[in-house]
Image 1 (spheres, rainbow, N blue to C red):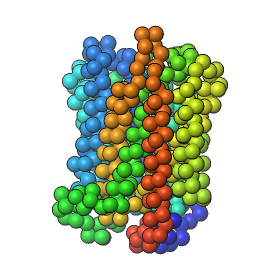
Image 2 (spheres, rainbow, N blue to C red):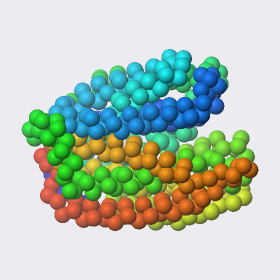
Image 3 (cartoon, rainbow, N blue to C red):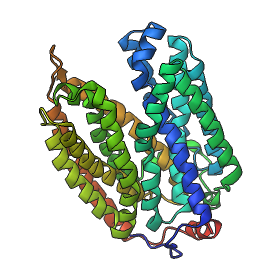
Image 4 (cartoon, one colour):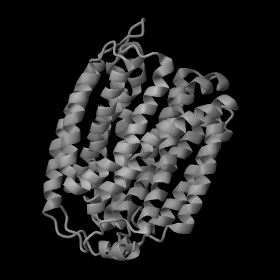
Length: 424
């Protein structure tokens, strides 16, 4: 692995723990906002008197807006203190979420989702750039393990609470709650996060367009982008039809569906940090290879399930989650070492854009492959699983190549020396 300028401490300092907690809370709000609208569809569609097609546009508007914003801001992302950039875009995200809570019609909600995605797409990229700036590579697995558990926490805590609020008042209530939580998280960032401006000492490119072109023309960066796209493309193919498949093909009663998500989510909350620690202790590529192997085996098993009891289905999905989380956490930590310090903001913004776009493309591909019979059975779901297996194998080769390059690279830069001092 890349040798750090200064040996990383075994334990996190108090400030390091605080930074991880803040970024995990921020990531939780971003992920919950992204995931929230789909479960509320049963309330939103009749309340706003819109069609399923219009609701589909509302859902997809967020992803495409986030993808575009990542590309538009890539040239500027390394020209400012990352804390200030994070606060500006997070304020925009909170404002967009508030607009969603106040929306009373289709066009207002569509606009609100576009605004929210426009800012949220950059927030995630900046937060990961901050992790890369402030934590040596030897610690990033643990950091990513904690931050990535936001996906599981949103399923276990956020969505059930949001649905309760929606049932008690209206579909708007969860967005108003999330906007309030966002204000608190933003205040914590403003008060407790120190400036993150060490990358400015590397004299960033003053031409945003030139900086963008330089980033997208770097051959090594392109390998990182391809890996990000493949991981997102494969991972998002299964998601759109997962609930339909387990209810209609596997025979899970629909009222047991929340329990299944809670069980898998709780296990993910526990396993995420453990996988992060394993990434740092054993090596990012080894954990990624393990996760890839588990994912391949379990995806083939899962997509061929028929009538299965709840405990067996939960076991399959829990093991599958271990594979997916092992890939996601280790890859995030390893790919964070790809860009130079002066390019991290631009690289992360483009990567976030590719991730969003790949997720949208994956949903479209899955929709073209999967067919639902009049009786409700889902056909060709196994084909989607085989495509995920193919993307996993290709991404495994790419990650191995990236890992070899990083292992032979010189120390990450003097910026890590600054980080080691700042984080004490």
